[in-house]
Every structure is written in structure tokens, then in C-alpha cells.
Image 1 (spheres, rainbow, N blue to C red):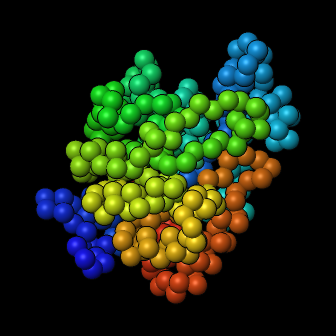
Image 2: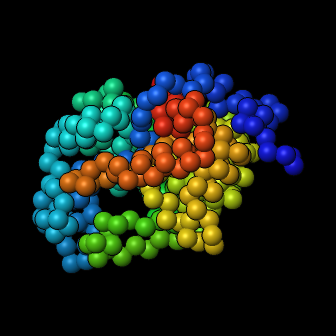
Length: 329
Ligand SMILES: [Zn+2]
């Protein structure tokens, strides 16, 4: 299609629009939700500590690692969940998606969701090609209240074409209310770098076009691609235009724009609004640890960009809250 289609026109034969899929309305009232945060629990730090060279499992406590990082000890999952909700209250954030950020930490976020079900949407990282990958997804989606299954193919170095990935995606698609998240593009994990952990990532595995098969096979399954594709912006747009069940999240500082000479986040927003539209853009910050807390600079800069672009109120309401509410009713 030569002209720029409006979002509601992006409806392929036989497919539903995202709005139809989610049975939601259009823009919600002004409400700020955060579609992308990390729940850095004590268990998360223990799992990281176990990856450190020369460390025997369990010798690195969360408190010790946080001491090295200059970060606050997260304490129990309940205490960390309370801290998150207090932080959200402070900045007027209604709900947030918080994800367990290593496989094996599902329990921490499940505890947070059960403590604040109206405020926290739970996600968890899984390695679908690990021997226990599918089992973990089945049990986490079964009864814990977790609903976002997060794949990081570059981190765990697997092809999205692997049949084990298809099995896991099938489990997610078969679970009412569950959502798939696929991290594509550049991946850097600051906490690993700070601790001197080697990251054997292979970025070639995080290709948005490889997500298309799942979006097409499961047209009712919402799929989030974060950070506008994190360097694969063009491919993320191609994917989202082809697949009405794909949502792009806007989270983090989007430093990947450096790879595109002259590109600014304002250009990214302008193009994404034209191709994808506000109903499939979801604001997020990528906040993770305390005392830094919720990343207001990310919100302030994206808010300013949308104001500069003269985006109408309803569209901003979608990006900052409505898309989240439709994904996570
Ligand atoms: Zn993130």
C-alpha cells in the first residue's frame, strides 16, 4: 500500500483488528500505565550471583550484591511489591507490568501480583528451549496470576523457528488473557555489566520478522515487541503493519536511535504513529531497581515529544494508558 494507512485500515483479510481482538473500546480516559518494568527481586539477584565466576550457588546474597551495586536490598517479594506500588502512587502510575527478569524467578512476581492484583500485571522471562521451559510456562500460567511470557532469544541464543518456541507460544496462545513479549534488537543488561558478568548474547536471534509466524498462527494472541524493535525499527514496523495483534512498546531511552544516522525519537514517534497508530503503541519506562525507582525522565521526554508533534489528547491517552488497559483488562 503506497499511502500511509490509518490504524483501523490495517486489517488483513480474515484477521481482526487489535481492538476487536481485545474487545476493548478506543482511547481510555487519561490514565498513566507502565507497560515495561523489571521486578529485581532478591531471588533475581541470587540467580545472578550464581552465574558469577568462582561463586558457588547461594554464596552471593541479594543484600551483598546490592551492596556492591549501590542499590537497595529488595527484601521480600511483598516488601518490594509494596515499594513499587508506593512509587507508582508517587508518580500517578495506575498499573505497571513488572517482569521476573531471569528464568526461575516467577514466584517473586506471582507474590507481587497476588499482593496488588489491581496494580501489578505479572510477566516472567522464560527460556523456551531449556528442558523445563514449557513446564515453567504451563505452571506459571496455570495458577500464579502471571500473564505475560517474555522471550529474550538473543540472551538465550535460540532461533524463534525452534519447535520448542512454537510449543511455548502455543501454550501462551491457548491461555485466555495471556500475552507474549518478544525482545528483539539490541540487548544490554546493565546489572550484568556492573557485576562483570559475561553476556554471551547473539543479537541476530532477535529479529522482529521472525515473530511474524507466531502473530499469523495465533491472530488472537497479543504480542509485544519492546523499544520499537530496539534497532530493528523498520522490521518492527513491517511486522506490526502486517500483523494487527502486534503492539510496540516505547520503553527505555531508546538509545538504539544512534544506529540510524540523524534519527531522533521524535522521528520514531512520528513514523510509528503513521504506520502503527496510537492503539498499538504502549508506553513503558523499563524501570528496574531502587533507589533509582520509576524513570520519570523517560516519561517526561516522551510526553514532550508527543506534545511537540501536536498529537491529539485521545491518541496520547491510548499510548500512555489505553493500549495497556486493552491488553490487560
Ligand atoms: Zn526491559
